[in-house]
Length: 178
Image 1 (cartoon, rainbow, N blue to C red):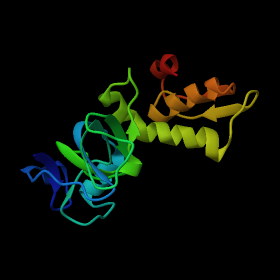
Image 2 (image 1 turned 120 degrees about the vertical axis):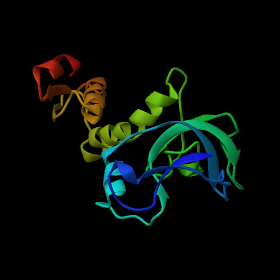
Image 3 (image 1 turned 30 degrees about the vertical axis):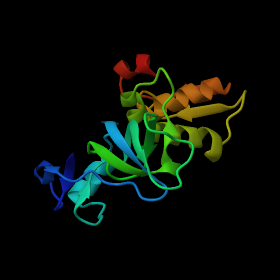
């Protein structure tokens, strides 16, 4: 399989497209055929060495795809299920090993590209509106960068919960998006 790997910290020249063996899922793990990977600033931080992780490694902590094989003891999933995940390395490859407990089903009507792009931002917006402060009808919340990924999702969640939203954006063009 192909994977984007890093052997030394650096700029874009540190990215290496390599042929590596398809991994086998161990107990509690799932082999996922990656159809889309999220691209995040943390990928840059890891590539450049700003966030140091053991080398070599395969980039990408957010992805979506189709279950290929299950490791021993995995229940509730089957080959062919569409899934997404965040905070697990290895999404910049044709296949990734993901702990079964980190996988979420991708609902009908949501593409794998949408799922890969929104899983981390969606989790962030969810905890901001539920765990950090439990929004309820009549609350007012201020959302900075409301035209961005997390901000746009947070605006939608807050409104759905019945909160009044005050939004900030960085330009006139972003007003309509927010």
